[in-house]
Length: 91
Image (cartoon, rainbow, N blue to C red; front, side, top):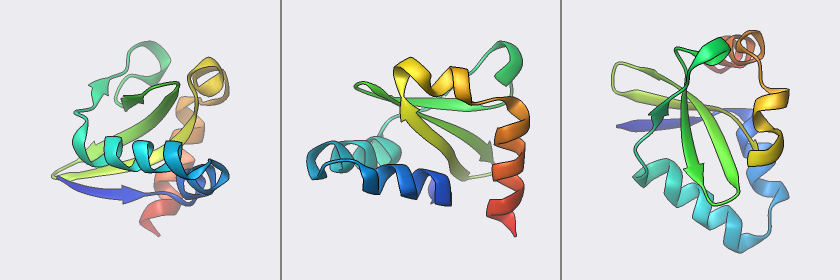
């Protein structure tokens, strides 16, 4: 599966120290995504330690839309925010 990374995820990745950054990058390539439920149904998550990456899957492409610490990612991310990021990443 091809992986695309939004600017929001790139910014988050480069805010991390090198070791967690590499771990999260490996997770994006190697960890199978899990479906989200509730308000975020239709989106997917990738878990990596204390981080979560929220994604969209279309055809054979996974688009990493938003990443943050597990404790805050679901409070910040809403379906409309993820839709906006997805739209921007396609432009």
